Image (tube, rainbow, N blue to C red; front, side):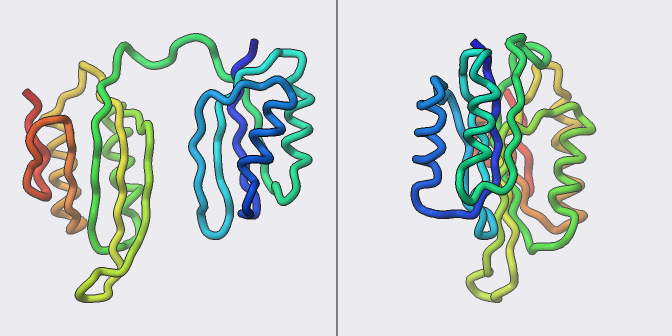
Amino acid sequence: MRTLVVSLIADDRPGLVAELANTVAEHGGNWLESQMGQLGGKFAGAVLIELEEDRVDELTAAVRGLSDVGVVDVSATSSEATGEGTLESVGLLVIGQDQPGIVREVTRALADRGLSIQELHTSTSDAPMSGDRLFEAVAVIGLPETIDLSDLRTALGELSAELSLDIQLDDGDESPAWGEVPDRA
């Protein structure tokens, strides 16, 4: 068996996921995990599939043949574990007035500390009172046991002040005040 990640971008339409799931099943694939959603009027998704080695090319061609699909990538995954040891998953919430560079700066602070982003969801909306555009990011990050949390807290606190953002790291302790990153017991 081979494990594959199938990622695609397509014109959004009713039944697209059902058509993809049917295609996977018709080619003997087992749908393991997925992350999908609508983005800018397009459908974007990634699916982790388990499949017999000799059917990979056949499935790839079938997915590329789906109607309205513009971009498809099929990549084999490694069966070996990646990463260093066990990662504790923690939530990160970022809210503030929308401005260029928020994602760049927050993700750079995480990457500079060797942290892995397991999930990232971003959106913008109009502020209720002022009508200004607000930016919100919700992330799940992996914290290795060796992480220096005081360094992470300091970096996120500096970003919070520099970009006028509210940043909250949810590591299971009581919720901190906005802009504060809590100590982990």
